[in-house]
Image 1 (cartoon, rainbow, N blue to C red):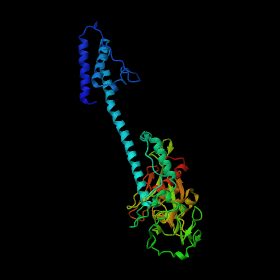
Image 2: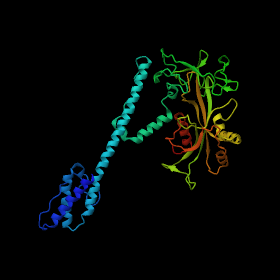
Image 3: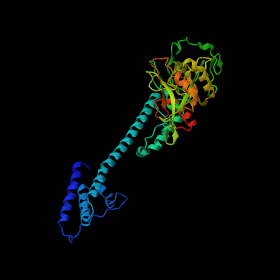
Image 4: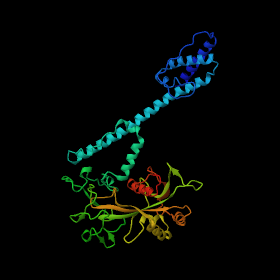
Length: 424
């Protein structure tokens, strides 16, 4: 209700009061229109709260005038009732706005799911001109936007468990290269499924990330500890075809080693270093009744998101190279002891965009938690944090499902939070 309408309501009401004041009390009192039903509302306005929502301003003013006539003759105050009714009329546009926002949110979800459906069609056409309907995404019902809690819960569940197939490992453009993968739809990921037209390009970087020469393929021993290199998979024995190992999670659309260091599994370590989030008084912060954690993360300028301070380890080494870059050398040995005392929260395949049909990443994630903010090791860790790379940033971030962390590391972080019954 705009200012002009408010003015007319008060003007009409006041005019009616003046007319009533000059009218003898023997005059028959106007009867207010009966409302269809009533509900709890502010005192003095109970008969009209639900009724005015379905009537125009003119009808509301007429009924208000009747009410004010009664109030004046009874010697009751009329101004508070006028103000109350004006305020109630003002709520109507807000309710309309909320309804519009809800419908827009529902439309946005429909558009997003339609885009996913079109994406599936394109992939099916690229496959062989035909596609299975097994995984065609269905559009959400209109009421989906009205159930945010259920939608968020299902999204978190999907984030934690995945859909059974690697996603990042099938992104068409391969990172830091001009190579594009052969498109692989979900139903063609398993090696057991026939895919006659599957003809992925082959890509192996000229040198591995450390600058060493390529390893001679003829001397590789798969499914075993090959010298200092562990080529065993956490998922059991993997197949070897034409002298090359096959990714245990299925096709990726690219053959070769890519930019990874080894054919077969490339083992990594990801420490999940956490502490309780505290306020200025030192009390642990809570959200939804659960304690809140902070996790140590790092980021380089070319990275899109933050990441856990882990990565590949040199043969025979305990700590990853990236972790050594952020820890002072004096802290290496104490942190190795902390890792031994930590709790393993994940061991297995990592859905990484660098994975190929013949090389992939597997990791062990270990939770290292500091319970006490006065912990000597925590104090040492904070004092020894350094940046070997001038472009690298290090910081503690609040553990939450909205944390800007790489997607393939979020399930690891969620497991660490679950371990302590903390908020995520």
